[in-house]
Length: 283
Image (tube, rainbow, N blue to C red; front, side):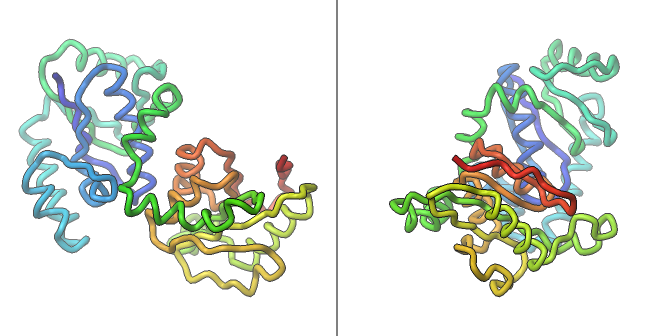
């Protein structure tokens, strides 16, 4: 069977997951073998392997900055020796089947893959597959389910409220690079988020207990959430991500992190806004 390798991607866990899922859905559609070399940094969270001994046993254990340099060197070598079999997005959206692609040049490349016996290598972050994400959602969620030790940790956060007729509102607050990225347009302080959550709560009319599950890449300042029922997520990247997916709805920073959690949990996602938000009513 033909192998499709994800050779080059950028971004952290959620960015990697969105591209990986799109390519995985494509491979399911075409009955190709999906292989993701650039996912080496996160594959241990899901019990996945690249089947490249050096990557699985050496590279993934090296310090982050070192393994990034080493992997780039490996990727460039693979690209050099497979020039005719590299599919490069050139930072342009590249739709994969079963999604419809109307770009003639990209359609020719896809046809080339179909009619070749050679393996192909995907280079770039802009591969998209909205129809595939919908069609193969069950298979994607199963494939990218974290190992039990992470999954159980995520579920344990909410289990203590399981019998209290509670509604869980996942809250993701991204700080880090958002303080400066795009002029800080999408950066929200904990104080601003607290105001938004209180506004959300004031628009609800339910007898159920609303519990806000707070997750952030920063130290959460709980004093801004006084008067709200809050619980903290596990506090690590994978734990927070899949805890959010177990909630009933997510309110969060614009970006791939909260949206992946919403996709995985098949729940609504609402991005922070400084304009009036049309809050959904919890039934």
